[in-house]
Image (cartoon, rainbow, N blue to C red; front, side, top):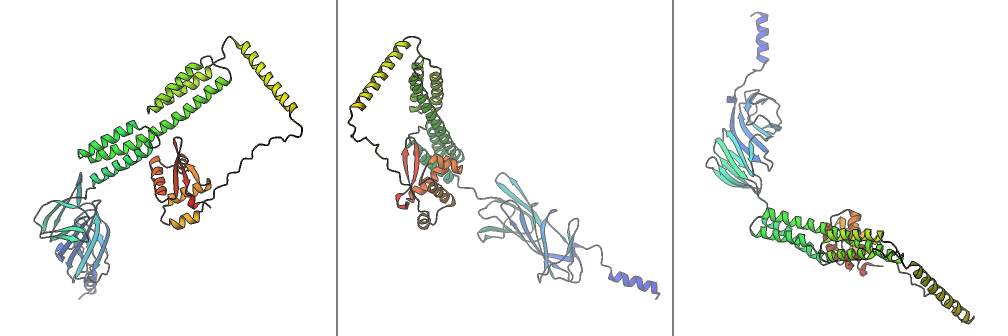
Length: 427
């Protein structure tokens, strides 16, 4: 034989074939595990021709991630992507375990997910925990549960599984929202706030719940809480404007600017009436008008001279009487001394005792307790909300926890809530 021919034969012996057929493998099992987001974990097992260096395997999707291929001894195998699947360097393996993830096998229509796949073997489909089968394309050969997740096994061919994820307990969520809103509104009304709009919305939430409209009921209950917060803010703003109007009117009276002051006083009276009726926006507006009228008030145009002379006479008489009393007082008479005002003892909070007894406190509870300690053991609820930038409802629940644990006491000062460390924790 010519040397050239021998060389070509040797080279051909060592060149692997470039085309491989699916006949080189025999599918034995397929498992598709579905996750709540619709992605799937595919585990495909095939028998391989051990005489082949490379084999071709068709996959069930064009897109896949996290590909792992092992033989029967769990040895990783290399592969390359083809138009229909993979070329795997099987290197004499008897069995190939192919594992990958893909989102190509599922579609979603509203709350319902559909799984579609064409399988050459009997296929096990494992659904997410809590999911329920809605429809099947074929009669299953097996049904059951694995680690709390339902599975269904279907024969080879067109695999179709329609399922729905676990629905939230809308009734319980709506009832919780209504209860929280009721408790919150009750706590605010105990502070003399009138929550007309919020109570109306809470009534609507209850009516929606009774007609099984749970989502709308929950949203309306949450809206009642927000409306209550807005109402309290309006009430506090109105109270500030009313106090400012009272001060402005008093200053005008002291300055003798009584001309037009009666109108300011009437407007202030209207503001106070609005406030008592729970019409806080109107109360704030009227109070601002009363302040403006008091600022515009002027001295009366007549009778100023006689008024001035009367004041001078009263001051002169009072001064003369005081001079006479001082002159007649015996020189050895003891001079009166002002009664000393006892100093208020600063309150020191025993933080170590609080945290030792209440070792299960939340982080935000501990921070508020430290804040109270820095303020000699007490602070208004509004100060706590401002300091930690928390919603009114969150602050209310936090204070309720501390009160229930007897760490703090809550007292009413006017329309405000004063939070004070319990005496048992004061040094």
